[in-house]
Figure 1 (cartoon, rainbow, N blue to C red):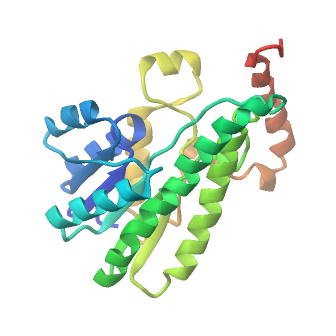
Figure 2: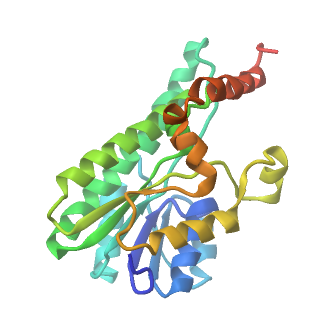
Length: 253
């Protein structure tokens, strides 16, 4: 896709990967609208020159209001990125984890669907556009410490596949961004030295998005071991390795 003249709305871009991609799209020449819940962060981002809109993807009314605001000011909107997500550990031996599971599903899976539903009619009416969903390597190679996160990302992957099939012939393309672990701060790099540097990750992502045709899955090199673990016969071994993190849960030492 041509990333030099797009009009892009990114839901959940007030920090981390979402904000970095917003900056990369803008640097390439695109117009970017940043959506998020926290007004203090949106104010700081607006000071960089971005258009911003408050949105809570767990609230259908908020999503609808954000859509209306974005389309009033940017009727040529042609690209949607569903970046919002939460990633929280859970102890499945403790039924109290259910509230975390419910919040994770509401944000990661249903939040994605709410945003896609809100903007799909506009893109279909244009006859062209791009929806970029965001999943995770964990959706293909579970991290047992965060089971519902893995389940929601696997769900978004399946939903993206179905969405692409249903939008075939409309001119609206669907791409799925699949990040591995990404160190969004220097502190995060210390916690997980294997995590990709945010800048390096974003550079690789933007290079892949420039490809024509846009790949159905945006897979940086660092996520390939996750994406193809079952095919490569490494799935069981890698899940066992990742299960060692369960020792972090209280009472599991």
